Length: 279
Image 1 (cartoon, rainbow, N blue to C red):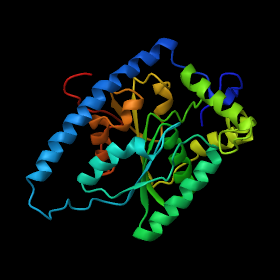
Image 2: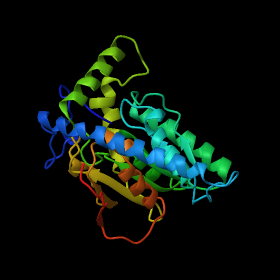
Image 3: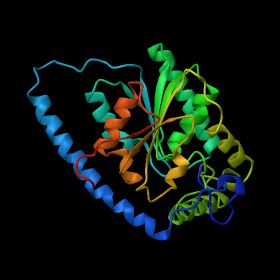
């Protein structure tokens, strides 16, 4: 749930949170470095697989994992993460979202249906990994259906203040609302960004989680798209990385943090992942 600057509801940007400055988006330039890190890791992993005896497969790890893309993105944005997690033994699934640009309540309902399908197929609960808006959707569904979700991992998801995002994002939403008014009904409507739909979506993203639903929130102070403070949910195990907002979808450092989160262990309330050399 992201909102336009023209119709921002006050409850979406609570006191203590703010939109990143116009210049903050420059920090997103580090995604080039993050993409390079992924490319190098992918080549190294490919070489290692070639040296692995034919027919060998990684041992399956834990429960099935559903990946949910962020605003304006589709399943393909999390394909690098999916491949890496699969090589590590996780069984990953797409959310079947081509572009996350529609009504947030409708997207949540679609996500719930997808979880029911995977849970029934695998005979177990599912862990959900969501990027940005995808993480907010995941949190809402996890609170509503703990019978389907055993844990969630959010990456740069501003659950505490959905309106605390960069102006460039607000312009994108404004365009979607205008297109919806023009007749493209599968896009975000005004109610989705400032009305009852926005209110209900925000409440869902803040609902109480079941005691047995594991929750890890990955955030970055380098985030140039959303206020990083809004991504640190008090109900979560917070993990800090030094990655751009967009780069969280493919940075090997973040993927490693996700893999650790998918194997719950006792850790301090705030963990900083070791990056080696800074970006």
